[in-house]
Image (spheres, rainbow over the protein chains, first blue to last red):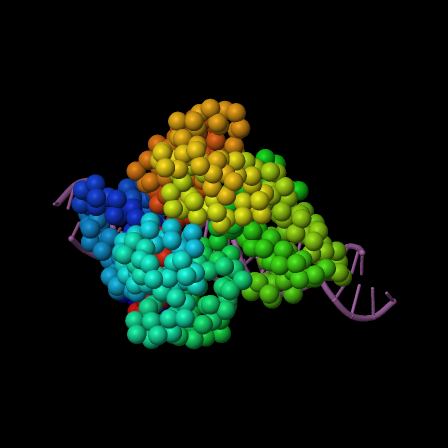
Length: 209
Length: 209
DNA sequence: TAGATTGTTAATCGATTAACAATC
DNA sequence: TAGATTGTTAATCGATTAACAATC
């Protein structure tokens, strides 16, 4: 794997490649060329080949790519075979929706626990995942060393909660609060899911001008 | 408003400007220069001025921008004052989480109804929003003409449901299914919220290489 | 007025696309 | 072998940044 400095644009396309290759594999497709894949995805063959060349050489001249092999390679680049550990912090409606519906294992994540302050929730299990009290965070993180925290707490406590988790050594945040989080600690990554921004973009596009 | 052809990159930054200006306004800030705003947002003053110039002239030399005025202008560009009507299609965990938690009015949307097939849900109200049977879709849409559908149905029926809604005249889709939707009907807009893609991006960034 | 800051034009940078020699 | 398709280099396109005259 070469990597060097891969641009954000390339990284954000990788999951989409992964998805398409998974679909192709499921449909039983064994081989694919960059031009056919590009046609399906609505991008140029050049872009696919250029993107992949950031990470290595996965094809074969005159043949194209083996679907399952390329899928596995991209999965590896994305880290889906790393068995990352994840906790959900905030088991409100959204946190529970993710626990119940989101296929963490498909992305290579093991969901180990959820945390909340509500006595109605603490002690229960949701889809097999135990809900612990927020006061147990320190003990649990020290013992299980999760890689990622899903932040589904109220906006008002978002930054404070993130700081607390960073102190405990967590470096990856899947942030569903509509707040932009910051940290001066190196190697902390925030991946924001800004619902409001997304809907406003749609609003712009459907507004007649 | 000039508009012409505004790039996707610019459009996706607008909600973020909107958010920052709202915060500033809430904090009581009356005026702001592109350089101070740029510093806060971690982008260049040039970019802000260049972006805004796609839509008109909102500042004043030697002064900068009036925060509340610029906020309102960007809100207008985004269409938040259009009172778009929205329905939620699929009232499972995620649909319910959005109904309960997401502040549709803040984005200028009126949530009029939710639809589901489950007899346990149909007839109930969630946060004041009536849950109707999917069979009532045709009648309801004809009567209320919603602009946007939030798609929170199972993957397996995503495209079929979208097609049905497009037939009924709906042109905006806030798509939470992990499926890429297509349509040959002109002016149909899909705004995808791909949870899996987002988490995989984070996975890439926290994976040591 | 003098200082500050805009809107816009020009320069730079990076990302996408095209072209093609290498080769399966 | 001939045809197909890669990986990579070069060309193009678009987006970001810098510079500055206009002006509040």
